[in-house]
Image: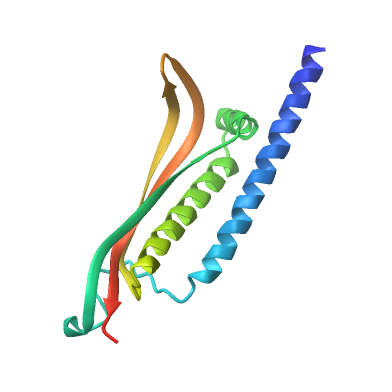
Length: 153
């Protein structure tokens, strides 16, 4: 009976985790379309003459994306034998894209025309401390930042 309950819980965890991930990716794709017109440059050079710049401001935002227990269990098994850990790849991809979208939203709020010197920092969070308890689960933090530029009209 305990084995059946464990299997049912793993199936529920897998199903709900997959549903949440698909929903998040759908949201990401929709929001990315809305920001297609704002250029993001990784270079420090601004492709505009300094006298044509109206505003320069640092913008950035971050996100923490956690993996579900079932996928982390599978990732642990893959770590034992080696190979691509697609679960972690998905976490990193979602975190980077989400933090970039949040940064773009802040840039749009200040009417920026472009972002230069764009960077993303990521951190792996292996455990979360909650009072006296420590919960082991993988989470990825991503922080996207850059310099928002508004061009004189």
